[in-house]
Length: 146
Image (cartoon, rainbow, N blue to C red; front, side, top):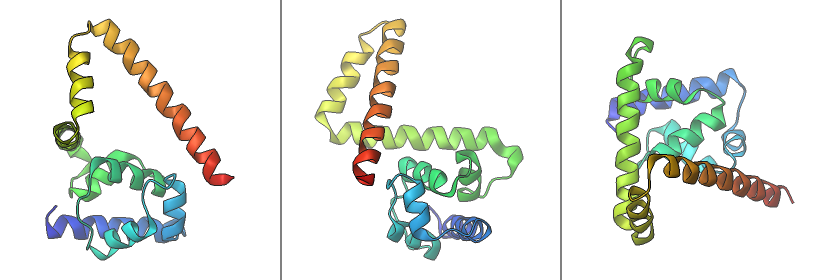
């Protein structure tokens, strides 16, 4: 991410936090702990590196703003440039996924098996994975609150 885009994201995050009277800890808690308060601090100071799609999504949840709004701020896009933002967001997601698959043998094997399924079977698998993820996140939140 270029220096000007980091600054744009920094300004946006700082503005939203002031408007909503949020601390870095509030953002962390609202994100479900998926982003740390020190990471939020790094974004505000412009020192953060490796801003992944997951981190941007966690930041959007922590600030309680739409993901596309955060992406527009991060990439300095106007509201009319949603198609471009969606394309860039999609490209970031694909890049992030590709990196993870490349570094993980089990993910590569899972994707290989998924590609062998029919589209309707893939939808069933996707629904299962989403349900499992929601259940897992609920369990993690309960553990954190206990």
